Image 1 (cartoon, rainbow over the protein chains, first blue to last red):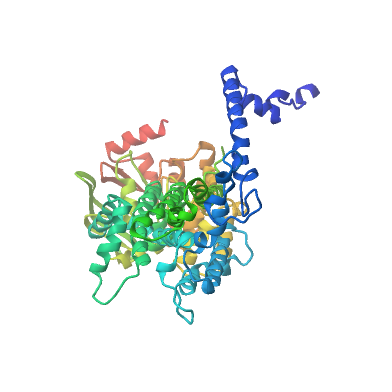
Image 2 (cartoon, each protein chain N blue to C red):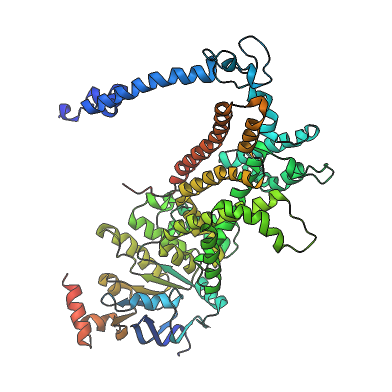
Length: 377
Length: 247
């Protein structure tokens, strides 16, 4: 009897690190061969990339100890055998990459806006933040504050948007596009499923039209056509026109993503909500949308990441975002030929933001899963 | 219409496409009366009770609930739904909310009850259905029988005058049916007006004031349980009873 009750442990070689290695990397001989091949490739690649980006790279001074002011002074141009990346171009042009042509005297306003953006995101990132409610109020009013801070007004000198550039433009377009498209997308998705034929037809038409047109076309449309629709004498800012185009584009995609989530909600949920006497809006806000949005988190983040990267297309209507500043720098005779460094840097900045978004979505999925699908199984 | 009727269906007709699902249905329910509706599947039982709180729209005839006629008037529909609670075959709890939140949601948002009061009410309702210890769990963590009892508590929290049950035990494992029926019996003994669509004939014999048998969209027979089970009039009823009681 005692022997029977003794807890048997699994064989040593199937658990722990060794077990993991055996199961995942050396399961059979093809598996082992592939593992060895990959290790060899990494061995060849990693030292080289580390050397190029860090150990042999110039950051501010070249290998002679001179401060770099143009591409001819880069180590890799002085001595092609030895030098690595020449990050000095980023160092020298850093201001433009981050702020565009924003006047230096006023740049503290942009810095405050960046800091406030971080603060506004905080309650969204940490659900357990103390006083989260008050932080959320701040998040809601942040766009208004940011508008006056960046654009001017209320005692601030005006800074025309054609002086904005670099990361500033990328973030303004990305954040505004995503933040505005979300509620508009929800309305469009609900509208498309509405029982009232006029509303559903209008929403369907809008979504299908916007989705059927490339973003570039919409950007041109915003630049060229939008002013035609406005009454005479009202001049719409260039960046605002682009923002309108980007937001419309994103909200059409968002609408379809959320509609997918709405379709996954069983009809019983609607019936239960109705039988409790809830109105259409209460039912949707309290019961249907919270569930539909949870289901749609991966595709919502997916389209948001897509938009964030697509903002680089504004270069074709003459707005210089992060990539635009990079291309502008490349066209400067002082920095000709440094495309590796510039594209590497721009990619890295984009990657940091999009990877953050992707991690955030995983965190949300994990957090929200506690409520749903926790069956007895 | 007799004066004390709380629900009155007159010549109600409804079609799903070309399918005539309710054919001239007439039913009067008095206050505190307990009606059990049975019949083969597809006979229109569920559709009939779903018309009473307008989850389905009838196309002809009139339905009056607690003095309010059900028409396209949204205000009237909302008022009727506040009077009428409903329990579904599939429970239909809100999976993203805890048990307590499931119950407090409608009192807070529809009845504008203060949160603390609603929570107290929720706990009282959970005591009635005998699962106060599950208040902070999520529906997915409960058994089917517990979920259905939460669904009953959720309906009761709106303090309805009438309760509709649409096959409340059909989706349950056999050993959980009793715990749900016990709660329903308590409710019936407490004087609630109830219309129950069910195949639980034992339950029907215990609590029903009147049996309603439906087939092919029509009410075939209406009788007291005693007469219905021992001496039914129509052959269709006899056939149905012989099939269901011989299981």
